[in-house]
Image (tube, rainbow, N blue to C red):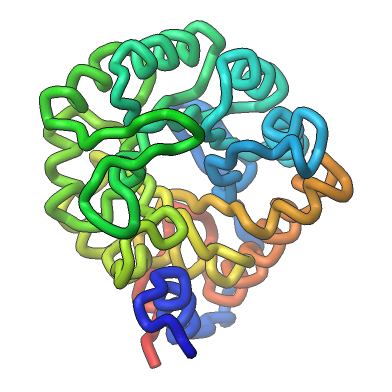
Length: 294
C-alpha cells in the first residue's frame, strides 16, 4: 500500500511534473561555475551533509569530501567527531559543517569553534532534526539528545563564529525571513528524508522564498536531487546550488573519492546540456519561465 504522506515520494512526484522549455536559437556553451561565500567552485552540485559512511568506505566522510574536491565542488558533512571533521576539511576544497541541534550547548559551541579553527568554508545547523517523526518529542540521534532551539539560541550560534552560518530545514518564506533577520547567510531547503511528513517539495516553495529574501540568502536545495535535470529545475526556480546524497552512496562504496567525483561530474555535464538547450549562458542568467508544470 502506498504511503501517501511520504515526503520523499511527494517531492519526486512534483519534480517529475516540471518540464523544460527549449530555447536553442542563438544558444551558447554555458559556464556553470559559481561563487559561494567567497570561494569559486566549478559546479553548483555539492555533496549532501552525509554522516556515518565508514561502512561504505574507510574514512568515508573524508573520502566524500576528497571526491568533491577532485571536480571542484563544495562538500557538506554531517555528524561525526571532531577528528573526522578535521580530516574532511583537509581533504576537501571547501567544506560546510552541519551540526545537530544538540541539547548540550557546549557540544554545539565546541563543534562550531573546531570547524572554524580547521578552516571550514561555513557552518550550519539542521534544525529540523530536533523532533522525531512520530510526535513532538525531542529526538535522540546517535546517542545524543536533541532539542528545539529558540530564536535567541540560534542567534548565539550565528554570532559564535566569523564563518557564514546556514540553517537546514527551513521550508517556507516565513522561516526564511526569520533566518535572514537572525543574520543567517543561507538556507538548505530540506525535509531530511521525510522527518516532516506531507512536507512541501523544496522546489515548490523556492520562488516564494527567493521573493521574500531576495539575494540576501544563499539557497541550497537538498533531498531528492538525482541528476542534471533535477539540478537545472532547482536552479531555474531560484536555487544557488543543490546537494546530492543518495546517488553518491554506491559509487563511494565501490570507488571512494573517484566514485563521488564521477557522480558529481556526470550531474554537472547533464546540467550543462540543459543550460545550452535553454540558452542559459551561466548561473546568473537562469530564467524560471523555462519551467512549466504539467
